[in-house]
Image 1: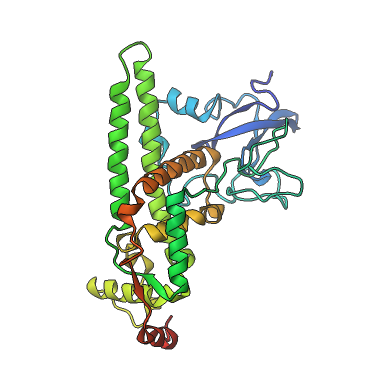
Image 2 (image 1 turned 180 degrees about the vertical axis):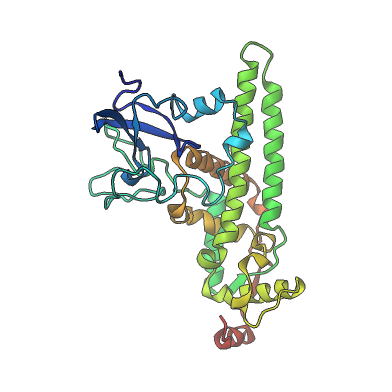
Length: 345
């Protein structure tokens, strides 16, 4: 039986016959007299590789890109982006049918570890080859001048024994709502600008897919913030303030507790209380936070596209959302006394 896919050919493969991922054939292997494709999922370690016998391509292996697959199978934008939820995208850590154990360089998606003499996906490539990386999408962000000012002033004020006042005037939830409203306006504008013609339907679909991806990604960014605030985004000086917020909200919601450690973290939606300062802090740590993400390159690329668009929105509106003067409180002696004597911090 002839091979329908060539060695080195990139295509879409359904992992566990359910979830589409970009993949390629790395070899043809003979197992018990039967020819098999050795399939490697791009951006995933070799432990996820699997064998597919010749003749079983139908319903499993598809020519073209992920965009082609979604279009050919009439998958609407919202459905295509549903995997942009923390921990939901990408093959699980122990897929069935893996034919090789993970090597020392096998890593989850995230910014790849730079090898000596290797290239960084955040830098322009100077090589004529296409080296296989764990992740080919640049996860670093470069803050524009306004957001750099926010970060710099925040660092300076923290060093002078100030901390951001809570609750903020413009919460992250408010900022996200206003960004999504602006995104909706942009989407409608692009759709209205498309003139009738043979390609109108196709062009409108591209716009719908782009903005559905952007909206879904920003909602995921919001969930990342709520999940990472406590462990990654607070200074030691802000811990007592954070604990006081947990206690206050738990009491308001009739959650019983003896210690702040007893309070479930989902008792408080932190994005209702914190603002642009802590969001900018998170943007500088996004590379680190996404190391634990299970997203594949397709979703990561859409996510980072949305992040950069969102940063442009923050840059244009940072003076509205940020106040250095009046937006911070002084750490008093009483605050320090509580902070240093709190037994459950």
